[in-house]
Length: 536
Ligand code: ADP
Image (tube, rainbow, N blue to C red; front, side, top):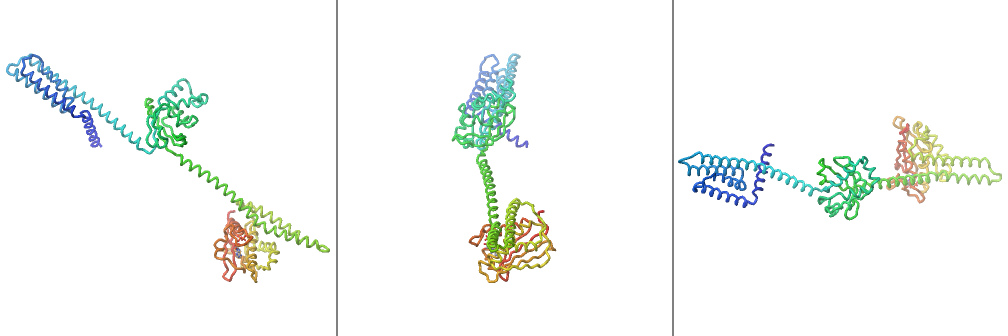
């Protein structure tokens, strides 16, 4: 945009001129003296009989005018001096001009022209110098205001001595600076002491304290510890002749606290400019602290999750083992009774012992299965015939069912296909649902204690549905809401883990488990399972 450029240079020139003539008193004095000198020279040249090139003295007028006026003013003054010289000549020699006086006039006029030309050239050169100076000052002013106002901490440092020292090492034949420093550790503190502080902006002072702005010798040793790895990297960058350095560095603030900053240094191309190297610092102490806290929190969470898993596993084991262990105790008591008979009923004792073996094997399978369930393992998946599984489960619970005077009816609504599942898992789910039904009816002292287990197929035999319905008190609104929450129980000696385990077992195999109240009373739980194992 030339117009703008033009306007700018015009105004710059104006400023320069104003600056040159700053204190117009100075210009006025020179102007008055110039006018007085011109009048005096004219009088001497016109009214005295002195024979000589008096008009040459107008040069003095031009020299004085140059101090008082602009280029145009100087041209006007030159024209005036030439005019006065000619006028004076005409007044004194107008009627009989001779060669000598004409030559004197010519010499004087030539002197005036040459002086004016030199003054104009000189003026242009001076104006250029002043404009350059003004531009430099403006740029320095702008730089200063950016330096002072920015919220990034800026630190102007003098690296000239450090650079000279490092270049000196290179010239002495050092090729590996780090290696050299390893054998000469004193180099680091020496280099730190060589750095001078030129200036620090407000943000740097806020970050590091007032001393950051001090340019007393060796001040940097308060901020940079000799053990600082980043400082070694900075020295290496100077050694390599790099144009910049960026990295994280620890800086000790005046108050003694360590600040972590993102350091950025631009090294100048000109070695002479190493006396003013700008170092920018962004305080990342809090960000780093927050990051560390997050990492610690995550580690803590992982530990807590592991502890919770262990907790769930032990709670689950305790809950699931309760039933087979209880059965083993009952069967061993029965076995003892058969043996105590006279004569001992060995056949019956044998049956009890076999039941004990079966229950112990089940306890062992439960432990194994809980482990594989927690690790989401697919181990032990087989084709499970649900009708057979339900019958086996009832056989396992016959003692409990008998004790609580509960009858169980199996209703086969449709022929159900075998499902891919882990048998012991499904058995545990059924045991939990049946045991809950028995306990609910027993606690409510229900007259008619009946459990109906219905097997059905849905969705073109792709899904099987098993419902377990009882004739107990049903589920209260509160229970319905929290039924599957771990550790939710309404029983005095309950753990509140059974249904939560059942649901996660069924869901792990791609199915669902819901609980509700039957319209005719009692609770009903429905399991839906895909025939093919979901995540096989
Ligand atoms: P627990 O049997 O240890 O209490 P569960 O998770 O198996 O744990 O059951 C949670 C709660 O759900 C039980 O305490 C009970 O209040 C309720 N509940 C479960 N099944 C039935 C049911 N068939 N009838 C009535 N309430 C039930």
